[in-house]
Each structure stands twice: as C-alpha cells, then as structure tokens.
Image (cartoon, rainbow, N blue to C red; front, side, top):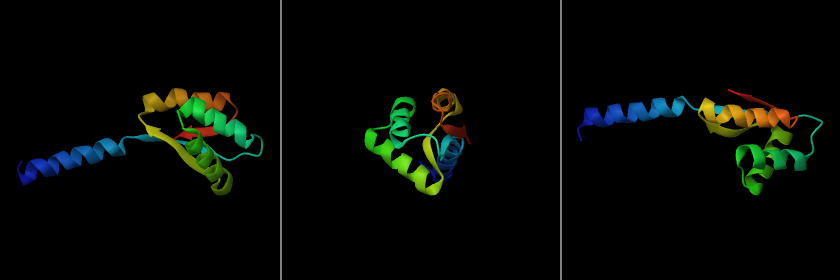
Length: 91
C-alpha cells in the first residue's frame, strides 16, 4: 500500500468518525438516580455500571454524552429518554 493510498484511507476514516452524533443528557432536579439509571439501560443499552457512571456525571457536571452513533440510531433512543421525562438532545 502506497503512502498516498494510506493517507486517503485515514482521511476517509476521520470523516466517518466526525459524522457521528451524540445524545447529551442534562441534569434536572426532578428525576431520581434510579430512574435515570433504569432509563439509560432501557433506552441506550447501557450496562448498569455504565448507566450509574453517566448518572453521576450528569449530576456533578450538569451534562454527559450517553450515546454516540448515527442520527438514525440515536433519534429513537433520545425519544425514549424524553418520553421518560429526562432532558436530552442530539448534537
């Protein structure tokens, strides 16, 4: 593989990574930790430990990226979070 081919391949991979969106979950004063954790497990396919870490980050930092991927994958997941009363958006 030549240098030019490898450089083009790396550039295409970088472009693919840049196209990924994120679901950002925001802190609120309404929902319990258990509700947030259960909802992240349900909506984002988190493991319990991952959901707990995200809930703590949201609590202490005010927001946390809870899922990355294509818009098509994230849109129904974000809708589930919103329907559960959480504050989230796709960026």
